[in-house]
Length: 409
Image 1 (tube, rainbow, N blue to C red):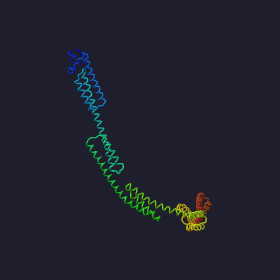
Image 2: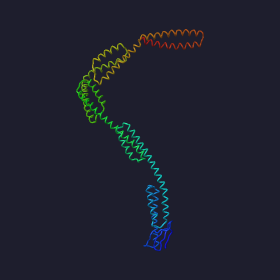
Image 3: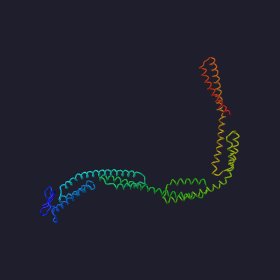
Image 4: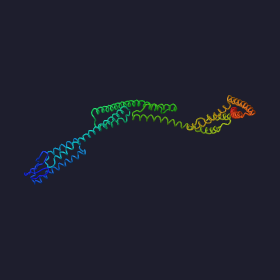
C-alpha cells in the first residue's frame, strides 16, 4: 500500500482521499504504479485548486456580479464536494466559504450604488419635467419642439426609478409635451389665418399701387404711396410665395411712379439751373450786408435784394437747402440788429437808467458832504466808512451812466 498526507492507494489499486468525514474512494489508475496513481489524482486536485483561485480573483475584483459569483461558487463547491482528487478538499471548501462575506459586501455596495443611481435618475427626470413644463408655458414655437424631442431622448436614456415616482413624473412630462403641441398647433393655425387675411389686404394694395403707377399728380400720389406702404407693413406677412409675388408687383408699381416723378423733377431742375445762377450772384450781395452797420440803409437794401431773390424763381432741389439757409442767416442777423437797436432806444428803460444816474449822483453828493464833516471832526472811523461807501457808489454811477448812454443811442 502506498500513502501520502491526503490519500493512499490500496493493494488492489483503489485510490482514496482523506477527508474530515473519513476516507473516500476517488478512483483507480490501473495503467500505472501506485505512486503514479497518487500523482494523477493529486494533479486533479491542483487543477481544482487553480480553478478556486481563479474564482477568488474574479470575485474579489468585482468582475462578476454578486448573483453570477454566487452561482459560480455553487458550481465549484459541487465540484469540490464530489471531486475525484487527492488533496485538502476541506481547505478548498473553506476558501469558497470565505467568499461569502465578500459577496455580502458587494451586494450592499451594489444596493447603495443602485439607490444612488436611482436618486440621480429621479433628479434628472425631475429637471427634465421642470424644463418641459417651462417650455409648455412659453411661446418659443421655433425651438421648443426640438428641445422637447431632445428631452424625450434624455428621458429614454435614464434608468427607471420606483414605479410610482416614475409614473408620476412621466405623466407630468407627457402632459407638458401635449400642452405645448396643442398650443403650438393653435398658434400656427392662427398664423395661417392671419397670413390669409394679409394676402387679401396685400392683393388690394398691389392693385391700387398698380393703378397709381401712371399718375402725374406727383405730390398727392407720393403721399398715397406712403399710406399704402404703411398699410402694407401693418398687414403682416402673407404666405411666403404669395407674399414675394405681391411685393414684386407692389414695388414695381412704386418704382414706375417714382422713376417717372424723378425724371420730371430732373427736367424741372434743368430749367431752374439758370435761376440758381441768378441767386448765386444775389446771395453774395446779400451776405455782404452783414455785419450790420447802418440798420436803416441795410434794411432798405435787403428788401430790394429780397424782391430780386423772389423774382428769380425756383432753383433745383439740390440747391434749395443751401441757398435758403444762407438767406435765412442774413435775415436773422438783420433781425438781431433790429432787436438790439430797439432795446437801446427803449424809452422806459432809458428813463429808468437816467433816473438811476440822478439818484446815484444825489446820494454821492450827500456822502461827500458827510465825509467833509467827518474830516473836520477828525473822526477816522467815520472817514474810512464814508470813503468805502463813496467808492462803491461811484462805481455803480459809472455803470449806470454807461447803461444810460446805451439806451440813449
